[in-house]
Image (tube, rainbow, N blue to C red; front, side, top):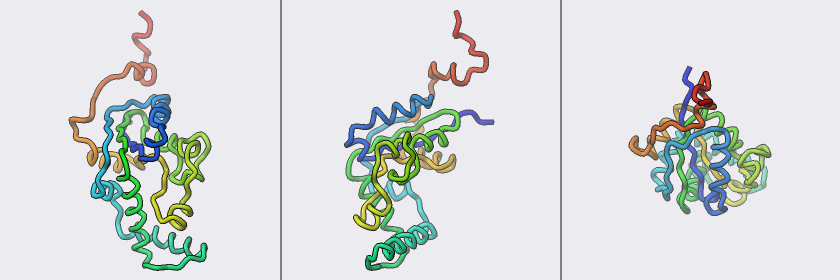
Length: 199
């Protein structure tokens, strides 16, 4: 059984602007996850589209959801569902390129699951209190997509699964930017016999 895995976390522009960088990094570190890569950049629109890597089936499904929400809100339907679906990624791209983001590669036992639990579900207004989005976010799909036609301000991105994590990490980091090292915390978390604690 593989005991260590890596996951990508992106702290989005709203996190940076709200001075929550340290608070969020602290939550992951407190769970025993180790940073093996970190950088701050303003991503390009092309890279954001490549990162989200959606197909027409995804665009259509999401677009149909937007159309239903617009109908429920009594708003006019101005385009095909596929285009509404593409608007979701377009609005995310506008949001992600509005300012600097911090990209982190974390490593640890079941890092992907742990990070997603700490981050909370995608929509902040529905996220559990105690999660990052639940504690610091108030945005909703209805507000951003139906009322304001903008990207959901949900503070961070977390990889969904191992395949996505590998693809996303290789998109944003060169192998030379990932540092392999041992952290003393790993002894207490993973060492079978706890050798070396007593002298």
